[in-house]
Length: 315
Image 1: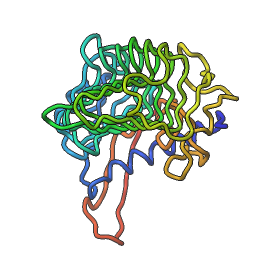
Image 2 (image 1 turned 90 degrees about the horizontal axis):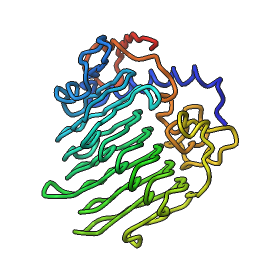
Image 3 (image 1 turned 180 degrees about the vertical axis):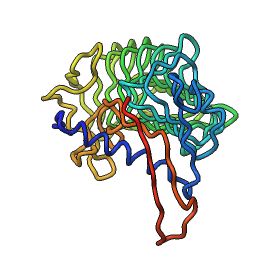
């Protein structure tokens, strides 16, 4: 069980996680800061995405960002400040679209609401989707293939709740893996799959499905590989309307995928949902947020030393 005393530990790990990501690709990745309050490099997420190049991190400060975001043919990371701190709201269309983004794109630590789809994966788009809360749209996550190829995204440690139709909708070529997530209270199925071309498939392990109106799985269910660790239980959120942290005694605590790569920041087994897993340090807090990062020298041979200077703010 993760207690309130872990709060400061999470802050320390968050700083480490941002630094590690910033050093990707031989220390060449940039951290592009987005803050609608004006202290970052840009005011909107889309502006940050537009200037980002492969390997860059678009770091989004806390706030409600009322926009639809398109990531097209870029292998970048969209990193929020945690699902309870950073939100994307789309009045129409899709909230976040990954189009032919290829492998190594990612979105981490956002609340995503409204729109036709929370996250739309189109063509050869294979983003990793982690520690997000997706709610209130027509569908939570959609995959659609086409001339650009077939999407193969992965979902881990997310909550998909209260969507008008399906939590996850896969068709027209596409496959998806789902782990450590809670899919609850959607208007039709938790997961729907339809084979129109070829290659559609779903793998589901260590997830909790609860009170989806049509059931857990719909469509051509023979294309769904149901692995171990799935359950159907009330996740016992602190408040299903406003606070999706897990109460003490929740069946989703320490029920996610076992193994070192999936551990919570305190070293215990993965908690299902948006506040568990390796990136849980970025959720449930408002800081620190790295605002300045200096690495010298910028390129170094293996075995040599580097100096890291970082400044941050508590939001």
